[in-house]
Image (cartoon, rainbow, N blue to C red):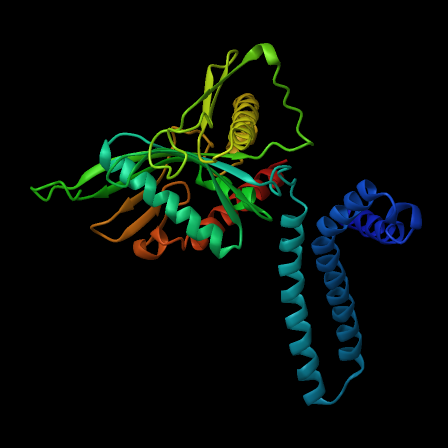
Length: 358
């Protein structure tokens, strides 16, 4: 590990020096690439420098203890020694986590698709609530939310909704939300007071940008334009602004009608289609790499039940990490930080354990 850290420290110094060169400053592509590399290396370098300082302080304290006769001074040195030893252990664990292979999609924006499953109108109502939960969570992170398509029902529910969250690290946090979410509660229309169980599915996909090569041939795609439908305000049913794309090889159909401009809806539809194609490619790769799946939290499978929201008991349970929280109201209002952080920690622990096995 330390040989690798020494190499990264040298590389960090090289990057800093290169960023000062006039040729690099004038080359925006190269400059952005180096700035990104510097940003990625900084937390590792800072932790490693602190680790080396703590190790040096331990050696200094041990030498001073051999020569010091004053009891008060010896006691102080022992306290410093103990604190530095504890910090070294913490930094070793931190460095192991920082050196774990990084998901190349973690820094990307994210496209999320929520679909109502079993439960009819109740599932659609819950889909709308989970959508709002994610919007509140995104706002808390100062991320931007942009609706791509929504199919609403008259009572305030959503049969499905696709939206993009743009912001630093959006995919790295949201990727753990993929799977089946189950809700248990008494619907407002239930006169007998019986608890019903409904489900929704959440698909989380990284936005496909220039560094991902997804080619869509003209012959493989059909583009239909039509008048938007549903609750859309002005221009709905008056202009052919809605766009539907059909991808023949996969049978994927995407639809966008949230913008007044046909061009904007077309751009959103293509962004969604590319994300779905890339996600399909990733799923196929994961299916083939069973070892990778075993080192992840959950399988990432859309059919995997990941979480239950029990309204009568006011609790939320994440089944992948056996976490139960009794603050359902706060969670439904976007306070999912504790769940996300626990998923990240469990994922890191699983990957560290896998790395130690090898």
